[in-house]
Length: 74
Image 1 (cartoon, helix red, strand yellow):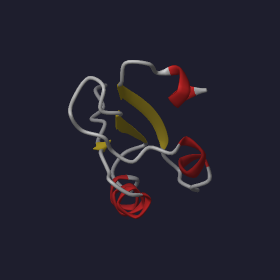
Image 2 (image 1 turned 30 degrees about the horizontal axis):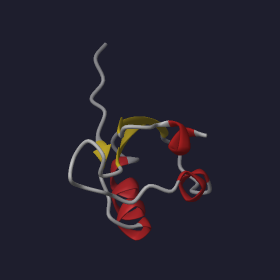
Image 3 (image 1 turned 135 degrees about the vertical axis):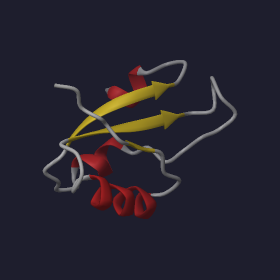
Image 4 (image 1 turned 45 degrees about the vertical axis):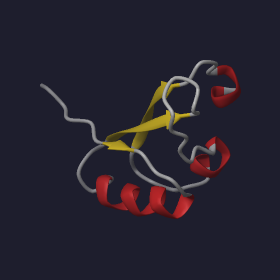
């Protein structure tokens, strides 16, 4: 069975949570896009500790569009 996985690209924690509340009703897995400005000229909000504190039935996968992922996943 195929699964469509929606993604979240947000500029703030508030925007992230608003999008999460919509998407968690539609999918069990949600992709979080993370850009740090190194590969693309865009930086978005990404705070792993803040995301970890959000209670949601969804699980996350990360799309890291970064040059050095270690500071983000560590």
